[in-house]
Length: 111
Image (cartoon, rainbow, N blue to C red):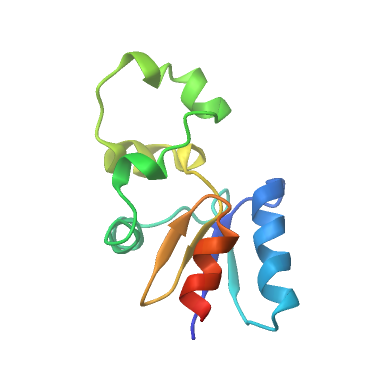
């Protein structure tokens, strides 16, 4: 199974996701979104499993900085513009994707 974890090195939830998969001896590839933001194709593949609005983190500093709570916007366009709006970690493979810390969801897909 080819697994990717998208997040930032400072994100506690991303580090916990990495630990989850390490403890189960599951190989993954970590992608730091500060260095390599998700492409449009990558975001669209995640959106097959996660609604676009659920990919945007309303608790992020970037969300508050841009005052998005007061605006109507396209989640895909905003995430392409500002990768730090992404709810991390995003865990994806060919058969599933999740946004945010979701160990129960990961267990279901690994079963």
